[in-house]
Image (cartoon, rainbow, N blue to C red; front, top):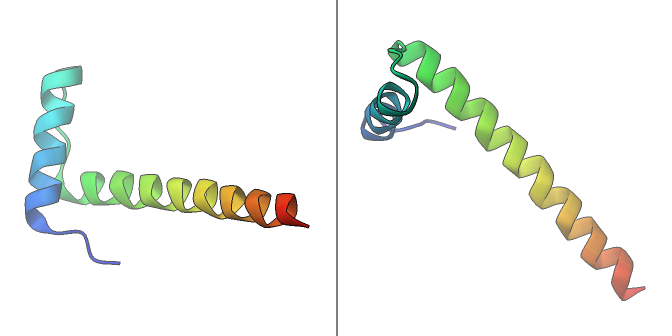
Length: 55
């Protein structure tokens, strides 16, 4: 999955404002990819829970 440059820049800005820390574009891309992966796992668990509840 490709993360857009504008999303990366927006995330870098949010990190800078929230934590007063600068991160590189590569670091931002890694963090964002990890977050997407984490939420994908949560969505899969939720979906499976709903399927199990139907049975």
